Length: 241
Length: 262
Figure 1 (spheres, rainbow over the protein chains, first blue to last red):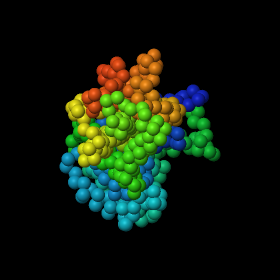
Figure 2 (figure 1 turned 180 degrees about the vertical axis):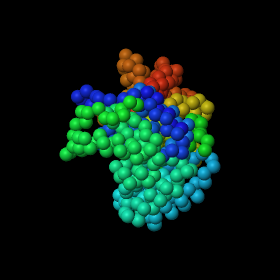
Figure 3 (figure 1 turned 45 degrees about the vertical axis):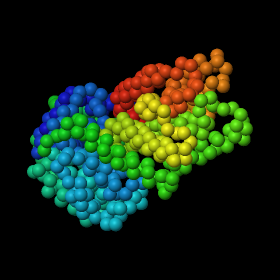
Figure 4 (figure 1 turned 60 degrees about the horizontal axis):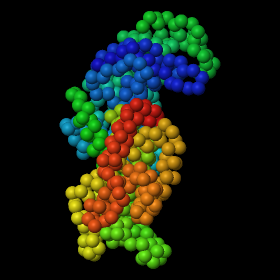
């Protein structure tokens, strides 16, 4: 279970700093996959980063009593001058807990990524698609209780994307996913519950469809030309959380 | 699935990082190993040549041969300087890894310092061994004392590295300044020029520099008859080392998020 208590987060900039997330209280049970919806800048990625421990809240706390992954498909963690194999080995060692076999794990990543000989070439020689494949294979090689995903299924070519979606689906039941995606198809497919982020608040819905519906309604009233337009001035329905 | 204890996590991070850094450090280019040996040798040859040509062998070190004297000075200083300089780049070079929340900003700094200390110790041992074979008197008279002096200089380097690596992320000019002062430090630490040649009323100020205390203590442990400065005190060095380590750890803890986002 992941418990978020009285969480506040803001980023400092030169002209004042508004709260991105304001007094968030959530309890995400284990084995429930959650989709985060909301418009650009609503704090979806921020919340995901906070859950993943990549950033720290200004106030409040996040209690994790399960194994939480880093955001799936993260390519920033690779050392460019080292080979794919060396990079995978490094991450495997960080997460080593005595009962996972390093050799077995390396093979799983190699099989999933399907980058062939390039696995033993420096990462700086990879194309962005190859990087993404490696990063994706790496995340799925570990048995986490909760996977975090930020638009990750949208990397690679058609075949790989299908394989990635399938890999996600196979995990359901054994593990859950907290994902940020603008592709509603994937959200409906993989998630049961939803969280709608709106004006610094997070509203929990037991059903992902309701969350998407609420998001659509608020966006539909004032559907902006530009995605970076001002926030909706209207109080959205159901902001009681 | 059971979660790991914080200590278990830290240990696996350190192990993974050590393997990675060791590989990067020793295989960065084809000549990485060669330069580890060749750099100090070249420095010693140059220093000895300058000394012989410029001073004509006139200014002798009282109580020690010149070549072993400078070898020990250079190694002591390099131990400090490399720990400082390698730490400076540690946080920036491993920025991508902070995406894994298990990795803290101190980890790359500590691992680099550990690795650097180990490499320098190994190479110093090689030199001592070679010195034994060549019979140039490079065997410490007080091995245990020499070991402790070596450790003290290392810890001073670790403390400086920890503090500067954190400051570098907060004030970007720190790294530049550290690079600029590293050459003058070589001179005022008495690595090349014996400090008892300088006027007595200036020696008081020279002794403010903690590196002097480490290097001179190391030389005293090697050459029992060596005449060093008055007032060499390892306690002073440890005061600096422990203060800098504490300050560095505090800065890394306090500004963890700023360092990660650097």
